[in-house]
Image (tube, rainbow, N blue to C red; front, side):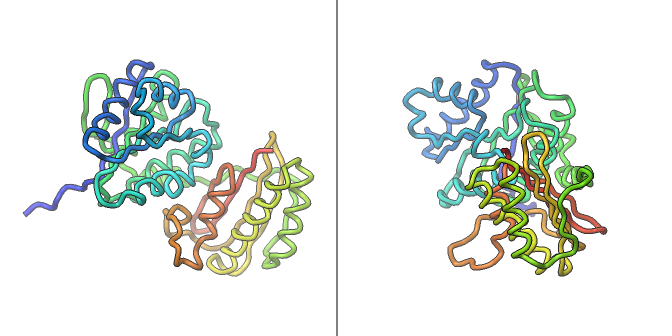
Length: 307
């Protein structure tokens, strides 16, 4: 007897213009609404307004989110956008349109976006859920489209629907687990420390000097605390903290000697009864971007805050 098919469906929609975008997304929404299925749309602002106008009164029955805000940090999309909506409707099929990769994404952001798309396949295996991910083939780099074929088992374009022969999400997760560029010379550092109080104080001074708002300074302090605590408890006992400003961003880096074995760490929503294990999730919620590299020589987290 053959194993039952996985109910989770994760297609990529390749579109060239507004007409193809609407042709691939609006029927997906209407079909879900007609079947009584919950539908959410999380796409960049311009495409969100395009869909809102086309859906008309039906837009009131769809959860609409601007992905440039809700998914500014790709690391928060699974817990705060996708799981938040799917978990609120556990009793039947759910449909989501999620567009985490657009042309204005920076080179620093892009690897985190691709890892997110690959990790979706791990996060939702066995769930009765369809996540349709649009890709603008007229504006995205060909390498991004090749990555989409590797992170999505099904591809949709103007020619129709087909299986992806390049589907290999585990390979993508491994390939984009790359060493981060070296920190600039002369950065403020606390080497091999366990001193949370000193790390928080230093983060406060440096973040304020970089021009971050009072709320952002507080967020940086929380991020430093959680990352260093993670080092102490799970990463070998100490961590090295580095802080710097560059190109309008404040960067907080924490490195330890451990290896992060769980690729979904920090991407699972916390449960009400969960009293521990929220640290990396909190980091993803507070930072504008999180990059990481893990391997035999340790794990480096780098959290970015836009000044």
